[in-house]
Length: 298
Image 1 (tube, rainbow, N blue to C red):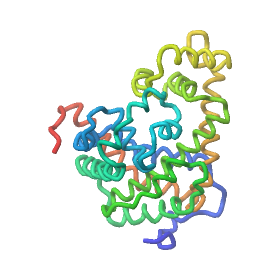
Image 2: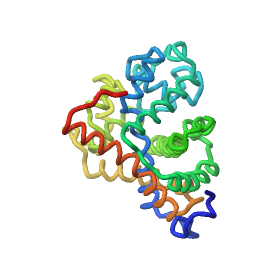
Image 3: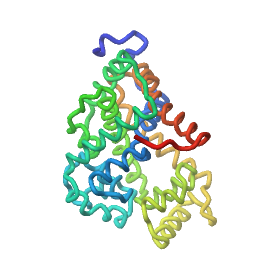
Image 4: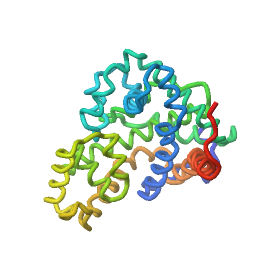
């Protein structure tokens, strides 16, 4: 299916992108992509490559598209991780080259989506690909390091996994744009993470465990945010801090409006609807497991 073959309701409009539509499709993209970092299939595939530590495996899977770069390059691209967290990935390219990590990532994605019974009909898959294809093909990748790297990855033959890889490109494009906005607002790697947790968008324990900023670094970032009036003396977010965090999201949406312009507001919202079953299937599976207990994976 090509863009011109889409139903009228899914064709791009002539007007400017609405930021609510940009936010909605961005959320749908992020939700459809997220499972790869949590699915047990990822850990299983990493173990097959000889890496059982979750941190280095995550870093290897996500940065594999960059090629066998030094850990310092991954650190620069990921932004809010501490150097000690990313340094732990040293040696992952000795365990297996990036091409094998990428192939294992696709295997994990396909296995996980099949396990939770993600179902898109052939027509839905074709329509989703017809919508996201022009977005990925027409994007400007200047300064979008992780997104650009992911466009260099050949799409796998499985149509659902291929769609997921295109979703990955769009997800990383927004992430790359977000880093530009963070830097423009003077929020360094640890500072942005402290503000993120203070606004309740990420549990502090998860952020500290995965990004590995030490107590001194975390306290220094907190003090800088207090000085800006974005946190109070108890490290609680202030109204000014909440407004600043939302402004950063809006500025990121503004950056991303150009990304979705090829399919317009209607196309972006239609794509969000088409890919929703991916996240919904994982949510349903997690709810079932919480009630009935976890099944052995195959």
